[in-house]
Length: 190
Image 1 (cartoon, rainbow, N blue to C red):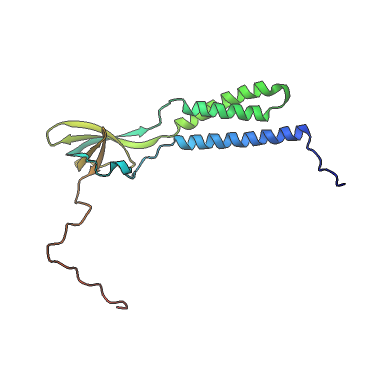
Image 2 (cartoon, helix red, strand yellow):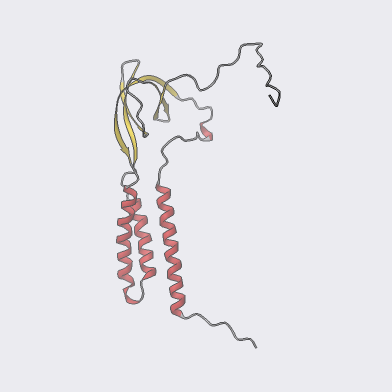
């Protein structure tokens, strides 16, 4: 008869469960904080936007002031941090101090989660745009380099939001005249 493997003690099983719960809590917090981050910058168009016209107005930048975009404080960071901190405190505590450690974890996690959420700020500018009809609007837009004053711009309105792009030559080449054929490419090796 072969001897059965030794059974881990209750304390060893409890310690392993605490470590596993701590790791899961940390993974949950990092995933939740990463999900809260908003992507500022060029974005691809969604498929449902194909063929949907956007209104374009022409104007000129008459001023810009630096601003910051932030997530606002909606409490998400504090809630996620508090839950994760409470789970971690409960998992790491032993014996009679479990309740106290859980409360300390909730408070500490909430403070850290709130601080992390508050640090997610992105630079931008509030542009004053004067349109051809004389109207003036202030339009906030993320970015690190301002569009210079006096620059002609296109204001693109999509779904109640506006995006400012410097006006310039089209981003495509005009079609060739009828009957025009481009010259053949040079032979290889020349």
